[in-house]
Amino acid sequence: MLSAMLLMGACGSTEPPAPGDDPGPGDQGSEIGAVDINAQPRDQLAQGGTLRLPITEFVYWNPFNVNGNEATYADLSTGMFPNLFVVGDSGEPEPNPLYLESAELTSEDPTVVNFKLNPAAVWNDGTPLAVEDFEAMWKACNGENEEFQCATTQGYDQIESIEQGETEQDVVVSFSGPYPDWTQPFSGLFKAESMADPETFNEGWEDVTEIGDWMSGPFEVGDFDATQQVLTLVPNDTWWGEAPLLDEIVVRVISADATANAYVNGELDAFEVGIDPDAFQKATAYAEGEVRSALGPNFRHFTFNTEAGNLADQEVRQAIAMGLDRGSIGESDLAGVDVPVEPLNNNIFLASQEQFVDMAELTGITYDPAAAMEKLEAAGWTLPEGGTIREKDGEPLEVDFTQIVGVPVSENEARQAQSQLAEIGIQVNIVDATQDNWIDRLTAGEFEILAFSWIGTPYPYQFRQIYVTGGESNFGNLSNERIDELADLVDTTVDPAERTTLANEAAQLMWEEVSTLPLYQRPEIVAAKANLANYGAFGLNTQEWENVGYMQ
Image (cartoon, rainbow, N blue to C red; front, side, top):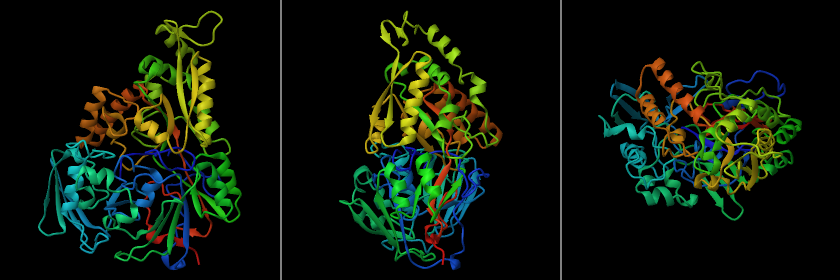
């Protein structure tokens, strides 16, 4: 639904995101596929049962709000909100017949699309999905009213008009020019009432038990225990599709470092292993479960606050990038998790994609401690006689690295960065954040370097959210006029080859700016009870919650 989400790394939950490459069940050295969910036909599954899942914390309930743009909740929300488009193994969005009978591109320049809604599709209060819902989303997130705290404005800011078509089920969306990713803005849909004004959008979703009428999907909220932090989802009485197999989904808050134990103790039925070696080993040893993995466009990275302390100097940021052995960091992160890991050298494309260009090789900003030290010397950062930390004008070259306590991969990356950068004369001070407050620090800019994972979508060309000036998730405060210009061009360029050239020009500038330094593609690794079907590592595929169930 959104162009990117964050994940802290271990189990996955908050931070507007998670990243990687995953091992298959049993033979962890086998080739990783696009999806691994123990796919089974519905008639082979039992009716009933409870699926128990963890979440690190419940954030704001509006998944379209910047404070609700969290990976685990986004996965749950696909069972409670409309998905107008679904993604299969091809990676290409296709109309979801449960909500959308068709989506016809009637003009390419400017882009005009006719959406034909399924007349059976209704919100939980019984009202049909309608043009008003499209209009409300557009007006909330087109960027004209900055009081709406939208996770992204991308796509909505390109729309010129939304009108009723020939019937009540026809919605005509007209863009101001060509927009090749026209399926993106309305890949999901929200009720007009829920986005009526900034106050409702930003503050009206606080009590999940009061917003059931704003939802539409196979599951609805049955109960939320705010004291115990337990959410219970039950089959939705107004659902017109095939009935969910499960009786309920119970989601409870549990810290990332306690999740694996809860799983092997029989308290959970599945959890995202992420890149936690200890959790991986426990999950693979659990006799009643298995580890499922898939490839996805997700990556682990360091975000640099380009307005903080010594990181305001681009030469320092580049030297840090050249002083970090990202391959070694990746291998250390994944020690005990038997998956291949290579440094990721492009902010937009993965090495497995044909559009990929190796930006480390192109720019020379790659692991080279000697060159890093030369760059620092040229910038005036010198080692005092007998000293180990560089200085300039009497001030030491030091940076803060915020680690998320209790998330092993975050703590490991802090230690690795501290050790490696000491070799080139940079002092790294490790600062603690908790699993409850690290996103707050990230969004408030109260950090210098912070590591987490970005979860991608089927729209790699949509980099505005993270990399353009003022982007909703531009936590590094990157501001480069040419990147901003290229974002506009990429958004409106229809020719695939030209679009790729423009995107890689932007990727080169991103690499040189070093506001987001990719580490490696992150595998999606999910532990699940062996008899749990149609659930696990989905890759880019859309979850079909009504088909999740237990084998007979």
